[in-house]
Amino acid sequence: MEHVTRIVIIGGGPGGYEAALVAAQLGAQVTVVEQDGPGGACVLTDCVPSKTLIATSVRKQALLDASSLGVHYSGGADGDVGGVTADMPLVNKRVRELAQAQSGDVAARLAAEGVEVIRATGRLVDPQVVRAGDRTIRADVVIVATGAHPRVLPGAEPDGERILSWRQLYDLQELPEHLIVVGSGVTGAEFAGAYQSLGSEVTLVSSRDRMMPNEDADAAEVLEEVYRRRGMNVMGRSRAASVKRTDKGVVVTLEDGRTAEGTHCLMTVGMVPNTSGIGLEDNGVRLDRGGFIEVDKVSRTSAPGVYAAGDCTGVLMLASVAAMQGRIAVWHALGEAVQPMRLATVASTIFTDPEIAAVGVSQRQIEAGEIEANVVKLPLATNARAKMQGFNDGFVKLFCRPNTGIVLGGVVVAPRASELILAVSLAVQHRLTVDQFAHTFAVYPSLSGSITEAARRLMSPQTAGI
Ligand SMILES: Cc1cc2nc3c(=O)[nH]c(=O)nc-3n(C[C@H](O)[C@H](O)[C@H](O)COP(=O)(O)OP(=O)(O)OC[C@H]3O[C@@H](n4cnc5c(N)ncnc54)[C@H](O)[C@@H]3O)c2cc1C
Image 1 (spheres, rainbow, N blue to C red):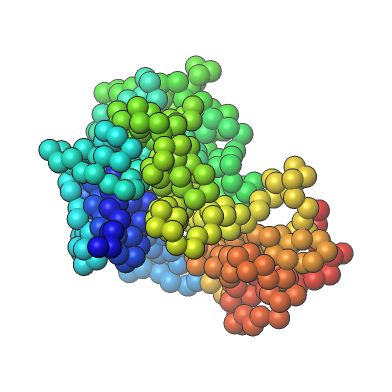
Image 2: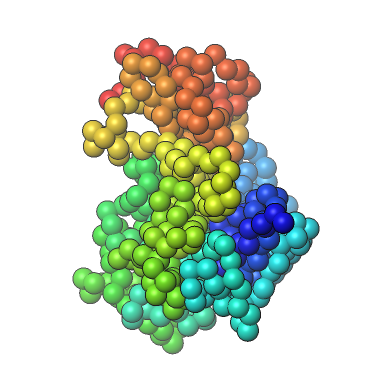
């Protein structure tokens, strides 16, 4: 009788459920053990809810900006848009319902593919045995995809009312009057911008010189300028030491003794992997110093037959990367042809307004001499479509190899940059040259016209920097 491979996956986020779908399609018998709900934190509390909230904030910001295009509102003129408000109970209800519906879609898809889902906390009792509630399941292959949770700063513990983690935001019944966001990485920057557009006064507390210190410096600079212009108080070089409640709200005390007062505080100071207390190290699964599971490029851990995918590995904390790691684990485990993970081709977006999308190498790598590349940066302010639509902030940046002209990466800062970056991703993935890119038609007028224009400029090395 043919042996059917038995796969047990701990965690039902994108790392887990995408692995499950591929495994089921390849004929394996699959069980997903998930403690919260199909879709995991990605769908229920993190990526999906935040992007839903941001859809509202971007729409509201567009209304606020529309007066420059000649749109006025009844009861107001000359930019008086006082009538535009966000109905937060409704906004948050929509966010929560959409997340539940998305989780329902994931559940339906898993069921349709014959994947068993057990609602329980799973733990390894042996590299090939998983305990889930009162069930003990033997497996040929185990995939750990348990994700991560918000890091808590001692002295700034969330209380769910005034001091909040991003997972508690959607229970608020009103818009924070003055929101202090502690942490200016991607998550902090996204929420700070969103709440500002929704109508809160926002203070962003950043421990570093500038916000989003790990992202493209030019992009971060554009965003900081936009945020300040819209009225945000961006406090650089300000490390929070504690956050306490007051009669009226919260007070954030910085390490240098300064304080900032607001009505609410959102903590966005990183993620901690969900890897303790589930039998990993006891069964030979090696963790790094941060508690992340060590994996190779085909998602293998140090324990034979045990793979890991997603945020619990800390490789790149993105849903798309989690999903790809999960699929790669299955392909490898089932002996299918598999391409190891290539991080140099990963596209990502920061869903601020404007959005920041990037793929491939970074300017920092080029400036550090790790990679030799030519660079062109075109401001959107010179793009005809951007002018028509009233956008001045943003740019397109493209990197290519000096001699061959092979496209190595790019950065787009623009409304819907998340959609525009696909063209650059294709070029990077398929090693297209700037010459091939430049001969590709872009619509006139369009923002993507700036991408082909950047490629044209890179065809003549004298116009390219670095
Ligand atoms: C605010 C925010 C916004 C984001 N926005 C984006 C974005 O726009 N684009 C993007 O690509 N990425 C985004 N991310 C990152 C993205 O959410 C993660 O990379 C993604 O969720 C990782 O998927 P995962 O499968 O590893 O884990 P998760 O989605 O965290 O799922 C893991 C699941 O496993 C469960 N679990 C944990 N331990 C156990 C156990 N022992 N037994 C059973 N179940 C267990 C957890 O409860 C959870 O439900 C965002 C993250 C945050 C915080």
